[in-house]
Structure formats: C-alpha cells, structure tokens
Image 1: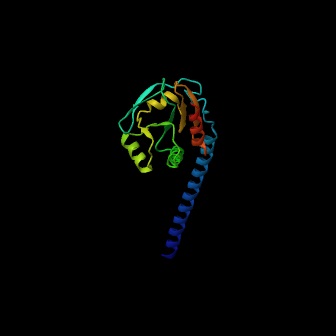
Image 2: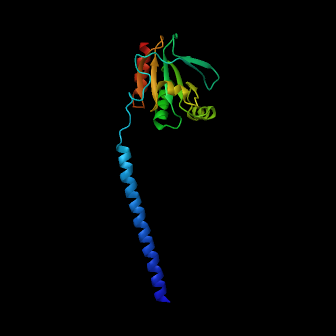
Image 3: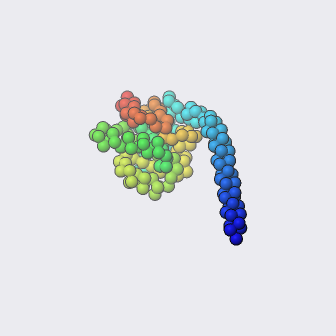
Length: 188
C-alpha cells in the first residue's frame, strides 16, 4: 500500500512538473512572439493624420452632451481648441485632467470642444460627471468626426483659427501640452 502511494505521489509530481514546463514553454514562446509584435513599427503621427497644420479644418456640427449644437471649421468669430479623445484612454484622461486643473486655477481657456472617439452619449456623460470636467464635450459613438481628422492615436488636439485653418496640432499627451495649446490659441 505504501509503495502504491509513493508511485501515485511520484506520478502526480511528474505530471505537475511536466505541466509547469509546458506553461514555461508557452510563456517563453508568447514572450518571443510578443516582443516581435512590439518591435513592429507603428505608423507615424504624420502617416495617420488626415488634417495637418495649414489645412482647412473639416466643417462639422455636433450636439454636445448639454444639448447645444456646435459647429467647428469654416469662418468663426473665435479660435477653437478641438480635442479628439477616447474616454477609455489613460493619456486622454491625463490631458483632460490637466486642462481642467488649468481652468480651475482661473485661466480663461479658448473655446474648447472635446469630441469622443467612440463611446455612447451615456458613457461620455458619466465620464464627464465622474471627472468634474466643465468644458464642452460631445459624444461621437460612430467615430465619424475622428475619421475626418485621423486614422490612429488619441488624444489629438487642434487649434483652429477664426478663419477655420488648423494652426497647431498635438498628438497623444506630454506634460506641458495644455500650456502650449493655450498659448497657441491666444495667437489666433
């Protein structure tokens, strides 16, 4: 009986050891394949941009989450800071948080419109409320606005002057972007 238990224990140990080696092998293969995928070059910001500095901004109208109809592009009476973001993107949240901090500090912002790249109206309303954002936001579940400007990467910020021309663009988010955006908006 004792020998049978030793054999049974040895068989279980051998099975566990084999299973562990298989798991290690699978992890190693996935790591190698994963590293190869990560090393693949992603398209540049320029390659994914449809609208660039100096271009006329596409004209569009969208209803904000507050029910106001806003038009961007074309001739306006003030410059616009257009922010294209995703409510699930950490860099987008960092940008929007930095924007709100500056507004809360008393700096008067340019005209701002933050348009989601995806997300339902309910999701964007909840996102705005949870983060106490006070600037104008709009939900664009079908990504149609985003597709006018780019094919990849968020957040994207555009300063559009009073003539509807794109004067400044930022991609993704870096510390200090909001200060630069506000400074550029003041020029137009």
